[in-house]
Length: 110
Length: 113
Image: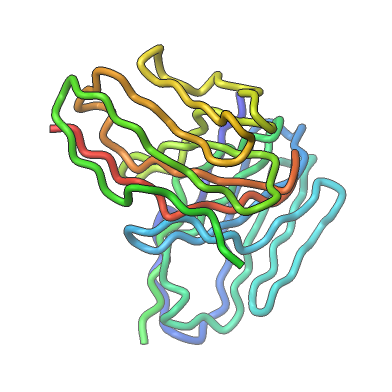
C-alpha cells in the first residue's frame, strides 16, 4: 500500500528565500507524480506533473525532481513570494489513483 | 476554458438524510475521480470512472456510498443515511485519459449535523 510522507509539515520563511519541500513514497511502482497547491477553503491547483521516465520538470519559479527508485520527490521554489503561501501536496499516481501526503503548509512573510 | 465544476459548494444536512453531490468534468475528459478530504489531511481516493463505468470503487467507505456517471460526462456521488463522520470536503477531478494530469474542482463541503 502506497504511503506518502511530506516534510516539513509546516514552514515559515521570509520573502525572497529559495526553499525545498520534500516528499517520500513507499512504493516506487508509479506512473507519474503530481504536485499541487491548495489555498484555504479551496480546491487543488495542479502545479507540475512528472512522468516516471522524467527526472525533472520546471514551471516558472518551480522545479520538481523525481527519484523513483529511492521513492523521493522534491519541489524547489525560487525567490519565494507572499502569494506562494499555501499548502503544497505531492501525489504519486499508483494505478491511476493519486495517493496524497498531508502536505506542507508554507507561509512566506513579507 | 471551463474547469471542473461541483455543486453545491456547501451542503448541510441532518444525520440519516440522503444527499447527492454533482461533478461536471472538463469537456472531453474521459476519466473522472472522486476524493474525500478531512480537515488537515490530504485527499483520499473514493472511486474512479473511465467512461460510464466505475473502474475502481475500492475507496468507497461502505455501501451507503454510491456514484454514477450514466452518460460518461457528469457524475453524481450519492450518500444514503448520512452520518456525522461523513462530514468532509468531497473533491472531484478529471483527466484526459488514464495516467494524465488530474484537474480538480473546488469541492463540496458536506456537513452532517
